[in-house]
Image 1 (spheres, rainbow over the protein chains, first blue to last red):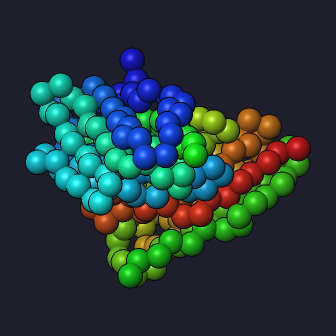
Image 2: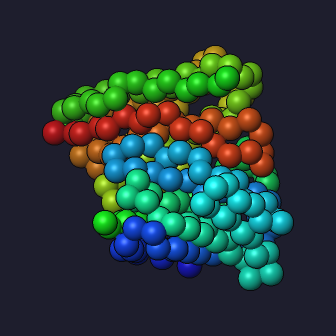
Length: 111
Length: 112
């Protein structure tokens, strides 16, 4: 079993739809959590950190469920420009801030 | 603000040739530094990380090595490239243990 798992998708949704991704992690000692966005043939870019209380940034909401060991990303009112691969990352809080990345979930927003 | 520079952007090398990819970070001191490889359509594979000058940890046995000759400089090298070394190489830095990582633009390496 992988340390961090994501549904690879693809998720194909119409503009304006709400879409949610989950990411499960196996290490219960994990300390910090992040969502990244990666466009085709580009580097991953930090989308948002995930806090215990949940956090929101515009149309994006991230939540952490420690009991069930998963994080989620909700995108409301999807735009064409949201089409990308979304990677989750989990830090165990030790070992030089190493992150374990999921393989990503691909989202395509269609007109 | 902090910036990370990685070069070259693309590289085509013959099998058996050497490799040197360089990454520098500006605007911070004593960052944690990382090298990743991403095969086409796949996830990120951590190759090396460093918590300070001269300190290198290797994650997977391979044909590559890394060095950190200066605080904000991280170099990925190989003496003889293999076909399997092709991929998208990404350098990243983070400020601290529980902080996110920030990536350079990446180097797309093709081995012929």
